[in-house]
Length: 68
Image (cartoon, helix red, strand yellow):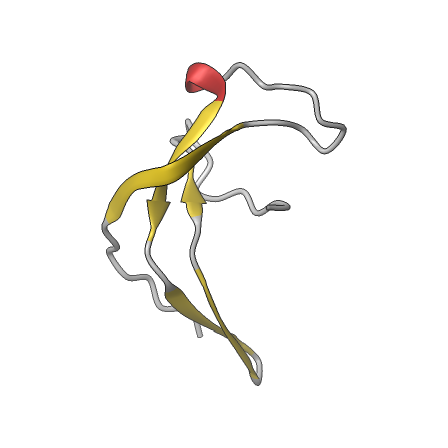
């Protein structure tokens, strides 16, 4: 079961550049990750983790999961 919640976001305290896995910079919306949401509890099957997500405003994509 998937539950969608409306979450608030905030400006990140520690900004960092948006890069691909090889380390090359991506120049999309300024190329800086500057928005995050607070801690979220996620349960997948029987495993539960608490994590915060960095936010990048995208076009038509709803979510892209990647490496930190």
